[in-house]
Length: 75
Image (cartoon, one colour):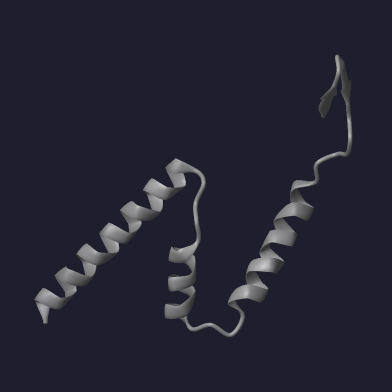
């Protein structure tokens, strides 16, 4: 819906399934043929606009680094 002056106008219905499929197809075509390491680098390079998702990704990266350090210390 949008406001035109004082009148609400319905433009189109939102189709969440179609949007999800479109996004999934775009991402799949971008990462097709990448190794796991390349996919992880691609994912880390993506800009996040949602501050919660950014904090969540940063925390996951910290935990991954800590796990790698612990693994290396055990060797």
